[in-house]
Length: 201
Image (cartoon, rainbow, N blue to C red; front, side):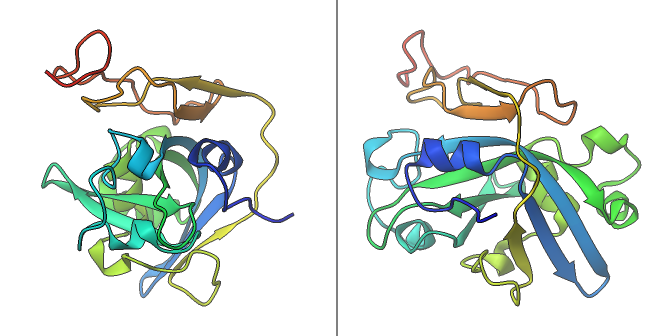
């Protein structure tokens, strides 16, 4: 089964659920089943990093589908995104949560003593559990010779959707997707800077 990696951010956000994200590092391999995603539609989406155009930070988002866009969130942790657009037209899917299905001991070393369902719950925790950092920026996730890559997983039966987490613009757009009932899905937190219509104050 091929992975749908090119298309609208919302289509790819749903298609990535159940897929596997594999990380090979010197200390070993970690594999994560993606359980929660969030779509960002580039220049058409005021919540996207690419809304105001290409910058040094967002350069990978304007590349080909399948690249890894990594950024530092809140100056505290790394977050990783799968680029879904075509050259010059940005869109990406944030990987919000997953289930560690291989390399749990290594993920525990990176994250500390936690219940298994909490190891990769939330974007920063997901990146940390896999050991993904800014050094992985621009990695080709379709190349299995890369240190990080995607593999197909089992089909997902039921997908839920809701508003995106922590964004102050377009906060009510229901572009967060997750495997219904999965225990690794992160907790929804609305940005205190968003008003009732999702417009920044």
